[in-house]
Amino acid sequence: MKRLVYLLPLVGFLLLGWFLWRGLSLDPHAIPSARVGKPVPAFALASLDPTRPALTSGDLATGRPLLVNFFASWCPPCHVEHPLLMKLRDEGIVIIGIAYKDVPADTRHFLRRLGNPFTQVGIDQEGRTAIDFGVSGVPETFVINGRGRIVLHHPGPLTEAAIADEIRPALARAVHKAGVNQKGGE
Image 1: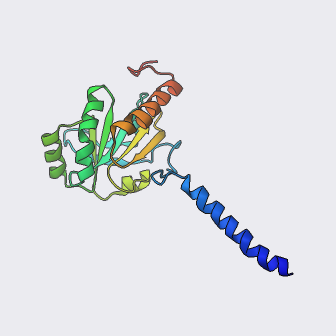
Image 2: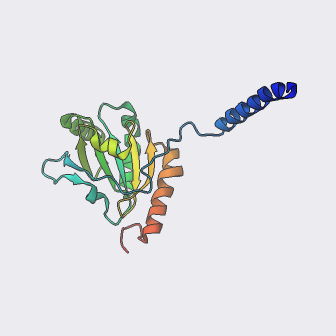
């Protein structure tokens, strides 16, 4: 019985040490997304451009991979990542923007001042679509395959490293799995 009294704290200490050591190997920036591998949630958002039809979830199943970027004019990290979005657009990558809890006039001013990397912009003033996507804050970017499924969820602002290490490989996988070339043809 005496041995057990001394052995239990030692076993408890070793278990606690193992869990703490295991925790050190986890990436604190990795936020698993429950939406990856699933279809984009159903939505219909008014377009920032009043002459264009509403942006819907069906618009994301184009047969060609694309990016969906949640952003806001009031978001400092969105200003930081914006030049990278412009660069991706210039490379021919289709980017859909969703203005998160933003005043449409402020969004228009933001895009006029910095340039518009988006093919289309939907207005999510209540933030409901962002919640359905699993967005925890802006900016956040999603890679969507040609069938409208989420391939990658990148929380936080894009960086050159994130584009090279995550976004481009996810776009390439989405193109390869869909059996389409870079131009979106079969």
